[in-house]
Length: 288
Image (tube, rainbow, N blue to C red):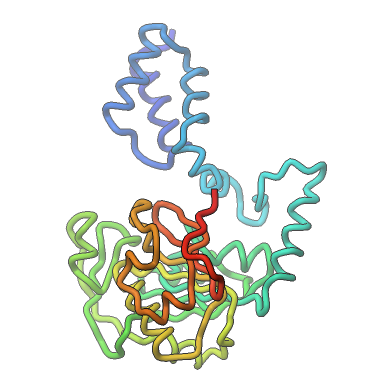
């Protein structure tokens, strides 16, 4: 006979595997009480997790976490034998000019905006990460792919600066205030700071390279302003952490220069990121 303790353990496992987090006490208690009262079975509780909005958003990450990267499918298409995925590879690469992605704040494979482009589509990457503790992991996870990896911080100046290690590696920052938004920092180290344009110059990146990803905890807008104002670089697409839970509705809402606003428009949005395209005319085209 299954006990409340067993149910609690099983439901807690649902949280950890399907939602990739520890259970919140209220949610866990509610699920356990529902099973204990006979309101729903364990199977029905599992189905509720699968139907949740949280799992829907996390599903690609959950699947990738449970399968080796060389075996994981890139899409969950409904074609007969994966024909859609084959077409998608060709369409994306034919639309790309250089098949180059620059990922500033690379961190690693999880939540990466560059890994699938390198792995599935054969792109070349310039990966930039400030935290030296993450470099070995990136080299391991991206092994065999075409990339250069730089261990520097990026901002709108050059020199040496303190880098504050956040409560987790995703929230480390040159700004102590930004790093502490998610809790107390774990330490501080000194790191070299570079502007982005000279790094691109040094690695032969063409001015109209295909994708720039900026996820650098408080430096994102500053770096984009500096890149556009001080150089001829105009990446065709940009993913930038500046959505602020969908509060950003226009580039006019952000501390960006007129030159950036004139060159880019929002074409897509997630809770964290804006997707910008270079050289289109409408100000806000949010994709459904």
